[in-house]
Length: 193
Image 1 (cartoon, rainbow, N blue to C red):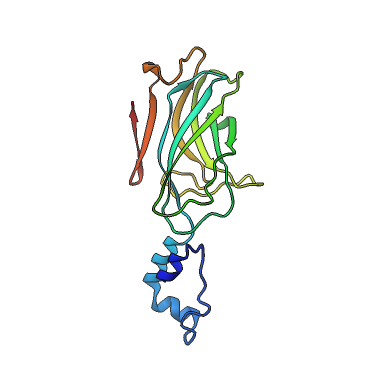
Image 2 (cartoon, rainbow, N blue to C red):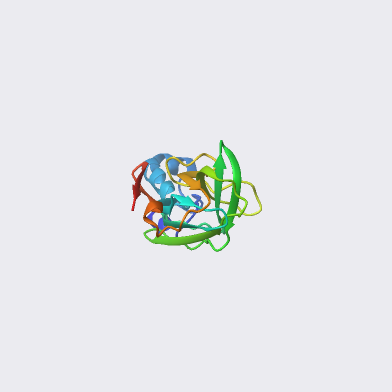
């Protein structure tokens, strides 16, 4: 089983393993080890930190800094762009992909710092929005399921609130200090700089 994990497998079958016993007997005999091995196969993308401005103006850039980890040993062979959306009352008002986002080579034990820059539309109505992110599956309306407590079953992760208002000065203004969220166990812990 260690060898399977060392090859960064996304799945394994018992064909050829201890050929003298059947697959069912093998799984039953080594059930605890198989269950632990299954947790290590495939990929488990975890957003461990996200930083974004507490406010932005329509037409301005929206900067989202992220720190990601793959907590399993496999790879995701399909490129799934990061999709960010702003919602009000559960309805998406704006959404865009970061086409440069590429998680295909993320390996276990590594940390990946990503900076995404999005242009907010100039006609985006002022107000309070919920900021969501997801890894969008190509050529589909589905998303990769994230290995983060709090992520919806459809792979959407809510980061928090952001205010859109005209006249907001960029994030270097002390009144617009960024919101930083850090993952600790099963919860997000917010901090403002």
